Length: 72
Image (tube, rainbow, N blue to C red; front, side):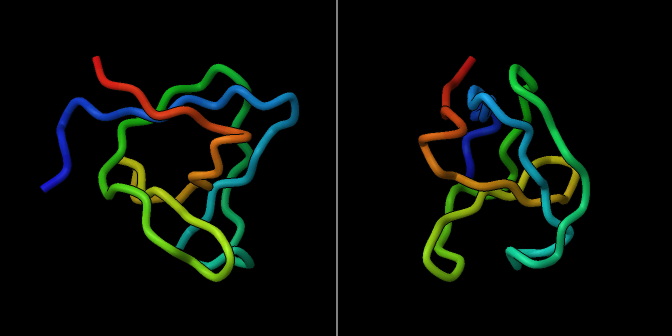
């Protein structure tokens, strides 16, 4: 079960894509540095990387070069 207080925040220099599904080719919406998202599903493998599912139902990279995980 996922901790209801687990969040991920973007801190990379460039905007990042979110994804409709757990597929790197299924791009949805661009998000920007500083935005914070509630994690619905903890990171899991997708291809050669990892993703989180966020509360909106979209997916986002779990790469620590672009996002950081924290708890409130």
